[in-house]
Image (cartoon, rainbow, N blue to C red; front, side, top):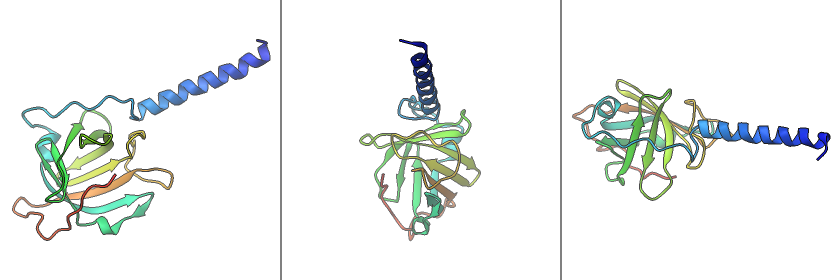
Length: 169
């Protein structure tokens, strides 16, 4: 192989390595799964427990007002959308920046995302399965990210009268 051909091949190899490294660091399919919840809930696992109502939902930079009022319920290490939705395991990693969340219904690929929990406000940004985990709490025209802002319902209020939906992927 002559020298003029080696340089382009080296550049292509270097670009491939950089691309693979960037994809893995973003939380793509090769990223290890977050460990299951501890048997005794503490930290954010304890703080996230309860019923949350969607205040705002966005995809591709476009607000989705029809999702406002939908309910997310977190109980132990299970979550569901709506009072009668299907339970799925969720896992938190509060040591990462931003904090990571995953939803696993046991059938579909794991839904990966990031979250921010501030008292009675919860922000979740997820991405379609198979894509790199979001790094920021935003969506764009070229992303499959979904941004959701939620507020905790007071303990004595249930999801009665609030729209109930099932989760679509």
